[in-house]
Length: 307
Length: 279
Image (cartoon, each protein chain N blue to C red):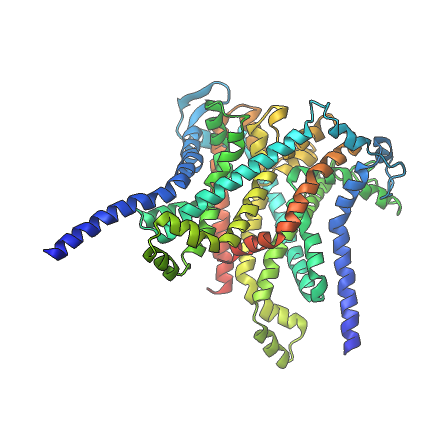
């Protein structure tokens, strides 16, 4: 009798408990639904309609927008394919540079005397705190063909003037250079942390076996930091895939549309051609590509690791 | 042996200085140009110290007669939205993470799985529908548009969840015996110990909002509602396209505060980065 009464009280208390506990998560859930889940669903919905920026919703067209982008030879297909190829070029050029230089900087910082490490770390990392439009403006000025510091400096040696931003090949170099200057510090910080986690005992054991610094790096350091390297490669790839500000401001996608990246193409499709339906379909395809590439990288790099 | 070490150290320091120059020169050049006349800037040369030192470029912005580039309004917009956004993110994320980690709420596992899976979703897919949403509710060019969209991110929930799930249960238990309710336990016992992590999340969120580019670019189109980032972008393609002295003064005004915040908060920021990477 008493025990069943006790049981009832506990149940009632539990319900009330659940209610007040739920209040903790309600504010976040509202934001989560309104600004993430709903836009996700809405984006998919828009992508299956004719939808103009001005006129609003038109007919339901199913997957026609996707077909147009992937299999037709029209404007939107050209914008998408050109953007995708240029984005891939940027990814292929920037990711190795961003990972390798970050590793070099991290190794360099770690072998400096302890007292001066924080100074150099801060200097290398400061550009990361500056926003993309300022980065772009600074580099526009640095790389200005006539009065930029770089060409003025090279001019002293009789080189140039080099068209850093108006020739396609140099333009890619400039975009990667500005990106490298801006974000390599971020990867460097992650890798410094990874290097500090490698156990000292392994290095000592290596020294006893007479391993050279290079052997230690290949056989001890690299295997130990591989999981973090994986993280760095994947996040850098995703970030490079989402590149927008640098080409938008530094080359304006030019010369012609030779450096117009995918995100710029989507924005053009939506806001210049005012075709939100097709632009949304482009965004969905781009999302799927990004998710696939990061999944593949995880799989590939994991397998190599033998996990 | 010692001599070899010394030589090695000198070599490494020279290399470190070389890289430091690479990272510092563009910033030094920006500040240097800001104090030059447009004429001297356009003439080129590699002189860091201006021949004719001028405050004219800065005065242009401080006098406030320039309706096309209200730079202090832009700075206010950026600082205000970043601060408000950060406050919202830190408070709702902390409560949500605590509920998910420690409280008894319905469908806890499913909710957690859904929220965490959105960490994989790149933001490109939400920005167009979000633009349509804000435009339909006539909320473009408002602070709501500059603040609210950032509050749905799952990163903070994920970060704090990891901390709360390892928080010692005994401390909560002790407070409960003393008669504290859930809210009091959360505010007085759990949150104070999460302070460093919340600072990390705060700096992370602040920088994300302050530095964001594409969203504020499409979500605002009046000079008064631009953020510093989008304002500079517009000016660099408009009035200042050949006036590098003014453009560099503008970027100097915009850069210095954030670099100061950054150097002060560096420790938390670095911890935030590494924590986001390890787990």
